Amino acid sequence: MGNNFKDSILSYVQDMNRALFYHAEFGPTFGSDDITIGVDDSEEYDCCWCKQESYKKKIRDTDDLFSIEDYEVFQIIKKDD
Image (cartoon, rainbow, N blue to C red; front, side, top):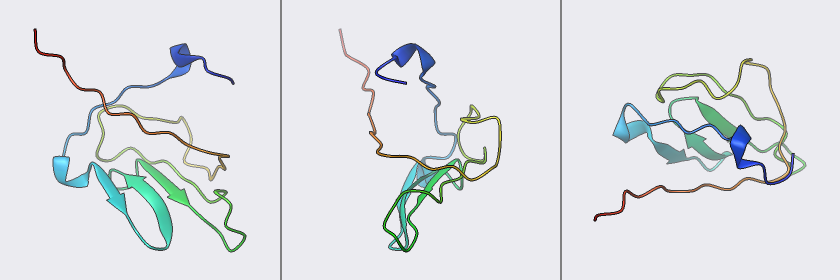
């Protein structure tokens, strides 16, 4: 996939109280279950899932489990003129 930002999805959270959550048994969770990064016994990120609940746009077209190698999170801040 590389660094192709044209494939990125920008979505705004609808409930700020559910924007980001960290649980000791999972990695970060965005929204209720919009993106949950799960870690299994091997310490790999191969138990991840997506379900649109707290963000405006759906991130994936399926609710199937998936794995990732790494992740980055960016905060976009509106620049005052």
